[in-house]
Image 1: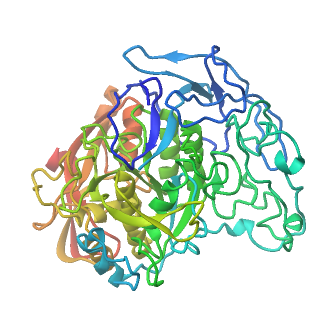
Image 2 (image 1 turned 30 degrees about the horizontal axis):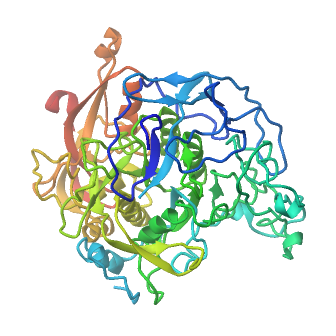
Image 3 (image 1 turned 180 degrees about the vertical axis):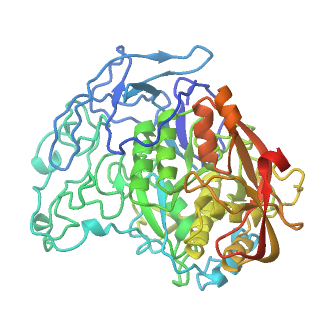
Amino acid sequence: MTKTNIIYKKLLFVIAPLAIAGLILTALSPNGSSSEVPTISNSPSETRAVGQRQSNQTNAQPPTAKKTEAQPGSRATTSSESTSEVVKTNKVIASKTIQSNGKEYPLRQYQPLLVPNDPKATQWWTTSTELPNAWDIQAGGTPTTVAVIDTGFSLNHEELNGRWFKNTGEEGTASLQGSSQLNCSDRQLSLDASCNMIDDNYDTVVDNETGFADRENPSLRNCSDRGLPLNKACNLMDDDSNGYIDDVSGWDFANFDPSVQAGQTNPTGPGTTHGTMVSGVLAATGNNGVGIAGVNWSTRVLPIQALDDDSYGDTLTVARSVRYAADMKSDVISLSLGTYGEDPYLREAIMYAIEKGSIVVAASGNDGCDCVVYPARYPEVIAVGAISQNGERSSFSNYGTSLDIVAPGDTMLTSTWSNQSPTNAYTTVAGTSFATPYISGLLSLALSHQPQATDNEVVAALLSSADHRGLSTASPHSPLIGYGYANAGRAMQRVSRPLSSAVEWRFSPVTSHDSLGSLRVRQCRVDEHPIMPVFEIRSSAPSAQKAGALYTISNLQAAQARLAGLGVSTLTHACVSLPTDTAQTIRQINLPTEIR
């Protein structure tokens, strides 16, 4: 890996730290169309043939997009192409850019980061965090969906078969079907980008390219050609009109096709295992008599492939994945990947997802330094670090002021995939990649018990129930461990057993701008740690100053205010009640007059 490419990595193994490249952010508007197809601009000096997939080399550059016409099963784009090169001088980046809605964004490259009857259900990371107590409480009655954005997945693994999200809009009897789309081999043609069934230039249109190709996807065959009854799941039509054909269980944005199965383009590639490993920690089936047990056995996993079998993905594939996850109404979006440079295009997608009601969770990174990676570094994202078997922060786990919580991420047995063992392989892993699905699983468990709670109220329940050793009410946050060490048992007790008090002192006025807001912000009890910052937002305009300030606990709203040039400060820290909590008397504390 060179410093001329900022790469999104699987937060799996400890790697050498890279310099963080700073970019000036403009105000972000998350409310754009999720179906927009932007233009990629590249250096005019690039000579790699169009259609050549990126290898896992350190000097790999994303391929070039060009103007296309719609093809069966593909999205059309009418974006015009331009060529430019963005060069940052302080040891940094010569990178391609994205042109979208009159704005220019850097194009970042991504790589993946690295008591039931199941024989291996009892591990250090389950017992030390009281996960068996959470399993005893079990999931609540509200179904949840967690989107895992990663590499490909072992769809038929014994721990995950039956755990995948199903898009009901692409299931059921059909009356029509599209034509099968065959790859080069099945058409008896030489391997070429024009027939390899891969979106080689990442413009969301398959096989509109020509030139060298070194691999191909399997042919897309319709129901009849597969010997199946006519059904929406295999008719090669976009039955739910969301822009994707046959996306029954997720979508592959790395190759732009309906299958997220690992190993389809390169069975021995470095990107064939990570998604299955992450999904195992999150949701491996419990009480099935084999293997391990994940954090939440009841949630549905929406598998979305943003990185190909060679671990290549970029701003476009990841941002499109995030928007897709939001449009599919995912409760939690889990990102076990990151980069060292800011990615405003991805940030817009994340803000879009949060506005739509998703909690976004991301890994802090594996460099062991004060250098939390993006997107975890963004304040509106839940940033997760790792702890080891000794109960302390793992030496490789990145830390910093944006860290929210730490969770198990070392020496963990989980599911994996190989061409030789596609359904029952297991391996031991380490990295903040695996602390992330732990937290995603806990959040989905909490949401199943608290369907009426806002996302910020659920996050507050998670943080308030953490082990706060080494912290104090005066200093509730540490850059090393965030708001504490995740504790599954306490978290599930908090969301399943309502609190009752004689008097509750609530802060006012506090806005509920979005799904991360809450009107239940209150003064903490004696035995509680304050874990939610209360932001004061002010305009520099004199008229606005006279009108007073806006108060919120929404990190999203605070971030949007900063990007809009407003003044944002942390007034105090508070606690947050859940909808099921009760109080005999509710009294108000006026923030402008009594706290400010």
